[in-house]
Length: 165
Image (cartoon, rainbow, N blue to C red; front, side, top):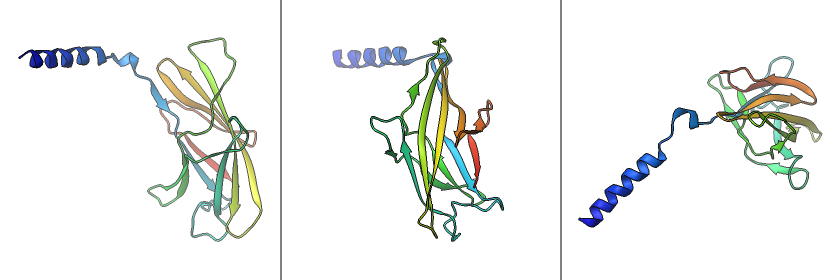
């Protein structure tokens, strides 16, 4: 009987202590969907194209040492059979100087190395991602590709980036 009461008491205390209100939840929007296409809008990640990218590497520039491989990205296919890179995270997020503690900015810098299947030449592109952290939100804010702003977050919209090479 004592064990049953103790078990019920623990269950009730756990339930009450684990409850939070809706304001305690932080929404996270950090997954990036990156499409590569050429000027003719051909899918440069397609395994069926002879001149598409066969090798892709992400290398972190903010790690303990430069050029640390980032392995958390995957090649996926959308419903229209177009390939894309899904990048959820992986690069170090360096805090940036801000005076507002309720609106913190973080930045990731990395290189994407791309090698076409029919070439030995390696293309190196630089990526800078800015994230914003608020008490109830963490999300990608901006995405720069080779110094050019490619994406700026619109509330409620997915993080889709189209790169034309």
